[in-house]
Image 1: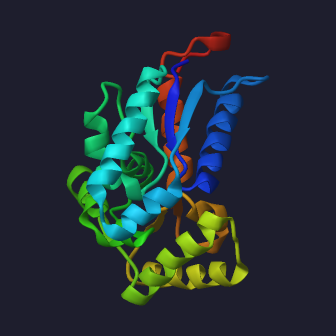
Image 2: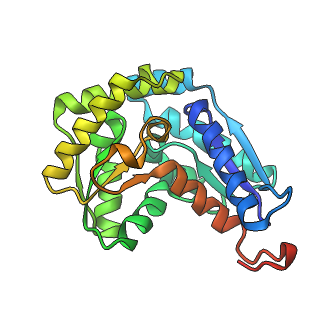
Length: 239
């Protein structure tokens, strides 16, 4: 089994979910006491969040590059950047290492296209919803059209992520507001909705949405396990 290298801490709430999902998926495939071979390097989200507010993406890219290099030096066979927003510096991070970076948008798009969809709604931080990096990746590489909520709903989503979900706060009132936002996206033509923030899946489940929901955290974790178990011969199983 190959070793998964995770850059975590953005936030640690979702990083813990990555770790849980990756190990659960491996155990489901191999049974018994099996779990994934992995390394996780967690950054201090307080520092990252401050740099995000300053729009200092160069400094954030440098931090991600250092983390990726350290994981590669520790034996990681791939890099999993355990956050959607920081994929804004995915290319810079990949350039710092020789092992592959498994892009979260690729993992998500694979699942969307498997259902034959061409237009999906996107919920995430302000950066993910409003900056071009995520939209461009989905449109150019995967030919997917992206719809985002209106400005007020985008601001609500951003605040809920940073002020609640990253703090481990799961509120029913927030869930209800997200249900209404997703209903509007569906009415505007979204065939499915991407939870494009790794904390959103902690609050929102399929039963909250009127259309198929794509939890980027789970899909990214699945892609990491698929990579790690490629050519895996443990217990006679071959992936």
